[in-house]
Every structure is written in C-alpha cells, then in structure tokens.
Amino acid sequence: MASEQELNNLKGKLNALSGVLRLGHEAFQKSTVNAVALHIVNNTRLVSAYDRASLANMRRHPLIEAVSGQPIIDGNSEFCTNMRSLLASFTALKTPLKLNEAFFKESKNTAPEALETFRQLAGEHNATTDILLLPLPPPPGGNSPGHSRHGFIWALEFFNGISQAEENILTLLAQHYSEAIWHKTGRPLWTFRDLMEAKSLSPLKITFFVLIIFLLALCVVRIRQYVVADFEITPYRENICYSRITGIVSRVLHGNGSYVSEGGPLIEFDRSELNYNLASAIKSYEQTCAELDVNRQKSFNNAELLGKTRVLTLKKEQEAINIEKYKWLLSQITVRAPRSGILSINGREKLEGKLIRAGEKLCEVIISSDLIAEVYLNERDASVLGPDMSVDMYLHTRPEKAIRGKILSISPKPMMMEDRRFCYLVKIMPDDIRSAKFICGTRGVARIGGARVSLGYYLFRNAVLWWRKI
Image 1: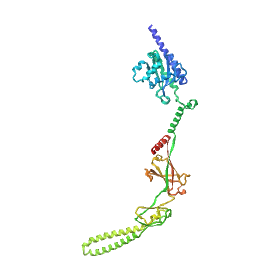
Image 2: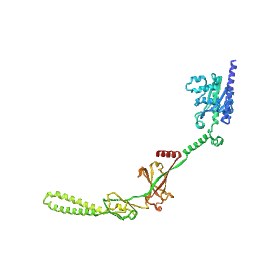
Image 3: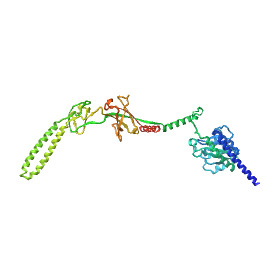
Image 4: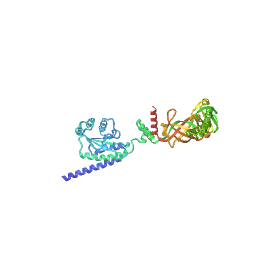
C-alpha cells in the first residue's frame, strides 16, 4: 500500500510538472499581452483549483488587465476597484505573498485600508480566504517599457485556503508566466504607430508626444548664438598732437575738418614771454661771465676768492643750461601735423588765447584710409567670443549693406564705457576699407555670431539674462 501511495504521489507530481510546462509553453504562443493575461487567469485551473484570479499591471498605476471568467473587463466594477485598492499597498512586491486574516493581524506596516479591502473581496469567507499575490517582475536588465521598476501582479483567491504544495506549483508557474508576458511587452507602451492612429489619440498622448519631441530638440538641435552690439568707426592709429610746453595759444592755422599735410604748421603759441626769458637768461649769463673773469684775476693774490670763483663757475653752467632750455621751448612754439589727413580740433575760437599746460591734447589728425571698427560687446554676451566668432556690421547711414572684416584684437578684460557698462573692445579691419570711404565717428549695429550650442542651453541662458534684467 505504501509503495502504491508513493507511486500515486509521483504521478501527481509529474502531472503537475507537465501541466506547468504546458501552460508556460502555451503562454509563449499567445500573440498579445491581453491574450497572455486571459490565459493566465483562466487556463491555470488545470493545475490549481482557485476560486477567482486576476492580473494587474503595476507599471504606472494598478490596472486590472484580466479577470477569470470575464472576456471583457469593466474597470469601474466593484471587484476591480477593490483589487486596485488592495494592490496599491503592494506596488513594490518582489516575492510571493499570501494574504489572510492572520497576515493582517501580524503585519504592522500594512495600511488599515488594506484589511478592509481584503474583507470586501473575501465576503462571507473572510475567515478562511487566502489571496496569493505572485509578482511577475521584469527580467533583470530587460527592456521594460519606460524602464519601470514594477511589473505585473497575479492575484489568486482561495475561499477555503491554499495548500503548501499548490502554492509551490503556482510559484513555479509564475516564473514561466513572467517570461511569457514580458516577452510580449518588449515594445514601448506607446509607439509612433499607436500615436498616429486616430482612435488612440488623446490629449495625454499628444502632450506626451510633443514633450518628447521638445526634449529631443533641446538636446539634439544646435543653433548659433547671435547677439547685438554697438560699433564705431575709429582711427586704427591715433595721431594725436599733445602740447610739449606750457603757454598761451596765439594762432590756430587750420579749422576743424581741414586737410593738412605732414609736417605742416597747425597751432602757434605766443613767443613773447619766452623771448623775454631767453634775453634775460643771456644777460644773466654774460654778467656771470664778467664776474667770473674778475674773480679769477683777484684770486691769484687772495686765496679766499677761490671759493667764490668756483660758485660763479657753477652759476655760469646753470645759466647756459637755461639758455638752451628757452631755445628748445622756442623751437616747440609751432605744433606741426604728424601725418597727412583730416584735422580734428575742439573749436578754433575756444583754443586761441587759452592757457595750455604741457601734456594737454591739442588736436588729432585722422587718416581716412586708416580706419577700423571698434565693437563694444557687453560682458553679459561674452559667450560668443571665440575662434568661430563672426561679425556683420550695419552702419546707421548704410543699413542695407553688411560690413565684414578681419578681427584684429579682443581686449583681455571688459572696460567701463561712458554709459557705465562693462564691454569687451573688439577691433575689426573692414575688408573694403579703402573703397568704402568710411567717415570717422559714424556708428552702427553689429550682429555677432558665436559657436553653435544646444537649444536647451540657448533657451536657459536667455531666460537667466531676462530674469537678471527684472
């Protein structure tokens, strides 16, 4: 009798194992996730006598995919609502879990609402009901849609309890079902084809689709940075005439805007005072020479006069130096043009008769063929500076034509302008400087392009600058 009982147990185990393999193989043959879900909740009765089964999708929020005996699911039914409420407390389930009255009494981490939901599902059999929750997690390193951390949960209800052997068989079968259902969910939740189907379009899907395109554009699309700055046509080399002496301006020989030749006289200082000083220095020098000759003759007989002779010798040398000084000052009476060009002077009438100190600016000679553009780039737009920088300049007097040129230099640090802005000074030599006939001092607007950056960085940078203005 014992051997016959062991044989029957062995046959039962083989039949159960055969049923598990058969059900798992049939699950793989299903074409859709919904077909796999219906197979799981209905055909598993071959190896288990459960009272009711359901399969929930836990990837985003609890969603009942299938219920045993129901080909079409009513998501708003009482059972589906209670099952979603119960499973909401076990979203991170990783191992099989058996729910019953004893479990809720011993568990301290379970929400009180879960016990009430369990009793509503069990009904009048709540004292003897076991609900077995079997997780169907995504495969390790698999391509689960949306890279969700959760998978499916298979819930089986046994109103009269479940045996340990039956629980072991279902746990083994759950592994096969997990591989089968995730094999069918290998594609994204929403494909491009689904989104393009009119019947599947919804505001949520459209918003999701637009958001994905926008995020991709922020990372993939690269645009060139463009900023606007002011510029001015200025001389490449400054030909400024500074006063070398301190004196009163006698005459200004040319007016503002006149053409002057290199070496030609521009301004003359009053020489009367210098002539008087020179004559006085010459007389003093001659008097000192006479006194020195007399003292030298007397010093042969009187040794006390040797010291006075030495002092007169030094005084003679000092007065000779003064004579040379006044002669040099007289040679600087006339200010001459350093180069040929257009004279720029600050008021002819204002300058004549004015006392000028040594080192003060008198005038400037501008050469029309030696002009450059100076661009004043605000320090907040310094991100466009670099080897890929391009500059297009538009004069206010000729806005229809872009002026391009070669960048000569960029100041190493920003400088304070007259309007108290800190700007980088970019010097540019225009390509057609000789044929364009630019006028010194004319201004315009420069459009400066920098390196290409991602659309996300460009929008973020402009948003920050806009916020700083506020």
